[in-house]
Length: 426
Image (tube, rainbow, N blue to C red; front, side, top):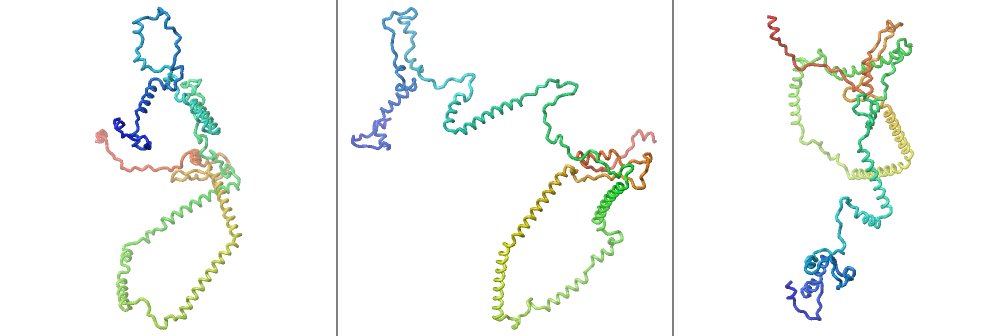
């Protein structure tokens, strides 16, 4: 530090500010640097001397200098030879100084050394509520850890999993929620109509015939609707257009259109240039007429304002009407909610629709009045058992409604004759 020795000499009375760089150059820092070097040396060689107790710095010598040498301890040059050098002793750490950190052993746990310090600091800073919440969360984490470990353990069974008998206990697999839920609340077999029995009563048989008649009427209406929407809108073969009607339709208006255009051109030539009718002197309004019109407009505006104010005031008198309207809307909302609830209750009994094909009930199994017989031998059964089962499965949403598809080839089959067959025919 050459600039310290070349610093300018100042008078003793002159004072310099310590916060200025000029005073740094003027002051001598040799003593400070020596003190700091000595302090660093003490720290490196075992700690500060000023902080050490007297027992560490001084040792009481209780041995006598005139004591005879023992047989175990060597004397003379040999004794001095085994003694460690003083330069090497300075490099040894101070045995009385505290170790900064102990080496981690094999059973070292991370955070174990600082856990008690952190707990003490948390107890100082946090409230009792937070400490209690932290303790509860720690207990929950420990319990959760035990539950997870139990779940990870494999199930222990006392039976042979590969046995041939096939009788095994439950493996603990939880089925889904809708596993045991039926897709429909309808029964597997519907109770037939009383009129479809072998020997029905007159009233039951007539009720069954009426029900079948209503079904046939609905089918007839649907067929008529399709006919009116498609076939009825197209002409018959007798009313269909031919070549003569096509020519008359295409040539319609050709001659008459040219004559009308000539007449229009003549009218335009005779007409005057101005579109508006001519204004006469008698048609002009006087000042009195204009004043009367203005006064009538002002009166109409004032009248409209008075009517508007009256309507606003009358709205207060409409409170009973408004209440009745609100009650009516609430009743309507309740009726809708009730209807929605009833629909939801009937939903398990309905057949769902998966695609464009709609489920259709099969025809009612019945016999006409002339077909009824009095004995079982003459009785002819109606319907088919497999068809009834199939319709029941579709009705209960187990199988979707289906339509029988027509198998039609898109290509023509090739026919050829084998050589062996040719030889036989020849």
